[in-house]
Length: 170
Image (tube, rainbow, N blue to C red):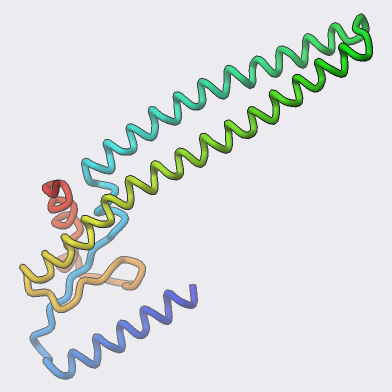
């Protein structure tokens, strides 16, 4: 939090210093990075793929969880009739399945995180290039992002334009 305010303060100091040098010539724009990225078609498609992946993993995990729960119930109902060795063997089998379930759950979470990061990495790479391209094309001196700015006149908001450029990029 302090870093944000410090970086915003340094940025504003730089803006004020440069505005004194060339008073009426400073051209500044603003972009909401999160909104620009989340409104791209690539991000939307990626989210659909993530959702499909999540549903598939959830079905697999639910089936394994149901199997474990059923085995627990069966063991509880039959434990009185089992020999101690057979009971210990069944308990060990259930414990191994529970460990396997936890491993698969962690693997699924890791896979989802990796896929989301891959999606964002691809868009972020394009984002930086498109911002530089737009800045040069429109002659902006600065393009600021949402966390660094407390107020921006809506006329200086280029978020929709950046989203459009990202959607056009291949």
